[in-house]
Image (cartoon, rainbow, N blue to C red; front, side):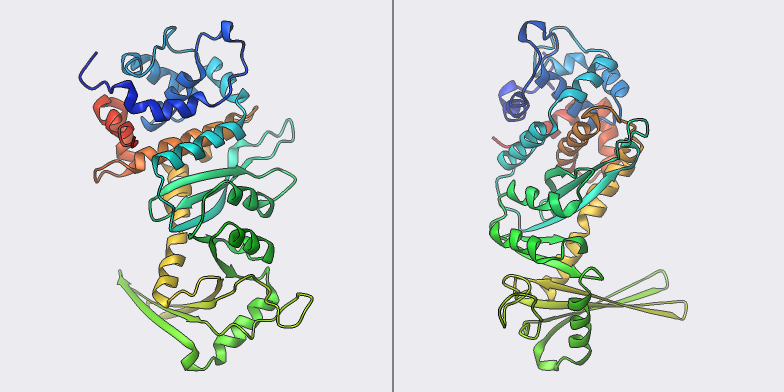
Length: 382
């Protein structure tokens, strides 16, 4: 065994969670154990492989490496066989294994959790009338980890999937931010019930609340506001952001059955971000409004809003551009969903590498350097 091979006990945690995924095949007919195929898929995806053909080619070229972790007695299957297997795996069970793996590997409770949805655009199937895969994911912005994912049924929307996702996570003490689609009392109640606080933007889907917020900040007494300001200047562009928060929320209207009841549970602050951009003698002004159940300072408010976009920049953009998820044409069975989970496994591991390389470069190095790939896998704590 070469000196880059990692002792099996160090990878026991990852392989144990793969073993928890039920294999519906008859045991006596299994030439390629499921946990070995899942491990192959994750390693190859880390190593810059974006489809089944690439995964198989990488596996055949690195079979000696893989046998440092498991038997792979019959080697690597063909791409069609691997595709068939990934189409058959129950994605809810596979997603459950992913959640358990993250919780075991990084047991600390997240401080800031961003929740957002993403569509795999080319996963639709016009022949069968199947729409594209849409996953709602939870992302711990402080530790830069995908925590879990929940698929959105074609006949439903994110509002239905978000409470299911919240139920799967330990969010006690976290601040949860979601886009405007989730700005409604039911989602706020679900977040509070999970032991967390919410930070929700107020947009056109809550016209009355938005109008109230606009009216309040237009004439709010200075003593009711906490204010922080930041300035960015680069390439002839000047951006001034003013963050205002107020704990005076008694004026917020209610559609509940009794007088004085708040529309949202435990509403603690209402906030506004005013962004002024000056570029080439042109000035634009934008105001955004938020509500939160946590009594945030203006600095904490600014940090939480800025952190929310980490799920777009560090997860969705990376999956589309670096992992080429938007180009994937997996359209049959559960393949699109299961491979999305494989990418989340790979992204979490690649993200934790202890160097200054970009993610794209890390994947390339892992594709030809077994030692580097092994170091990524060693990041799993015991």
